[in-house]
Length: 101
Image (cartoon, rainbow, N blue to C red; front, side, top):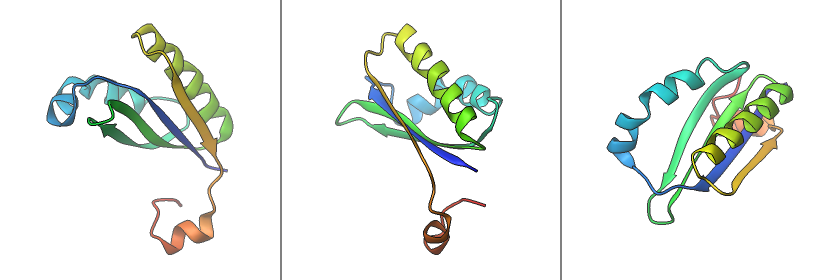
């Protein structure tokens, strides 16, 4: 069953178009992660936060990605990485046009 992963962390930029230009290779590499279906990139320049909402095929894929991504971010100097895996209520999500199959 598909699992949603929510991740956020302190991030000091770049944001917006600069972020999009700087992180193309990272975005492309995420597409190759086992079990990854899609990602929505999140950013909040005012609060200095970055992160994402991911959909994975299963809990094991989401957990493996969270472990790898946390280690990668920590190597980049990010202190606290908040990650949470959620089940999806598909009937309610369908009512609200959520991109879940």
